[in-house]
Length: 212
Image (cartoon, rainbow, N blue to C red; front, side, top):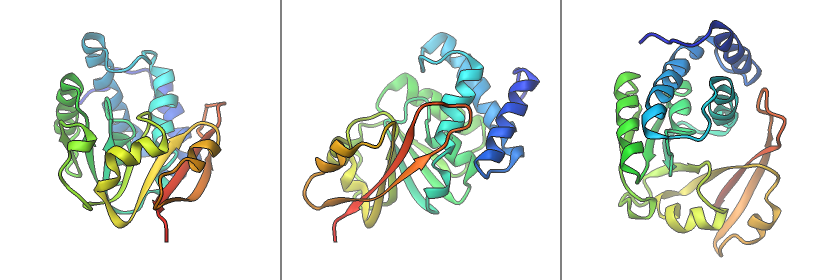
């Protein structure tokens, strides 16, 4: 697939990947995904971010900042929208089987096309609300980038986690109040500060699991 994006964008993404401890050649499939997203976004309004440079930082690198904390195995990305962080993670981590959960029909159509065009054998699309996914205990981890509070994510998706499974929740500032409001039986196991190349804002990854 041709990537009709300026060459400096490729260099910027490759530099960001190096900063995150990832392989620079991953820039090619990631930019293929970005080009597809830009094309569909003109018609279907899949994301409010429209500038390709901003997309590199806020979509691709922001999604990949969590990669070192993702375990091999099955991951469900709840309310993935146009595939964030699920598609960048599937590209960067072939050892992770990503299920992209999205109830919006337009976004689900885009996701199926992206999985097909990018030949992502380790990704699949479920057009469904998270709470309606009937795969209890099937996932080593779930993630949700912009879905809800920690308690809200667990309410709709906690049933998907294996007994030792983890919620990996991307947050801005350290969400102390959300952690304090976790439902009984769940606990924050770790809070990882993340550095997203090119992004000034704070980012934290909260790992939540079942309380011992």
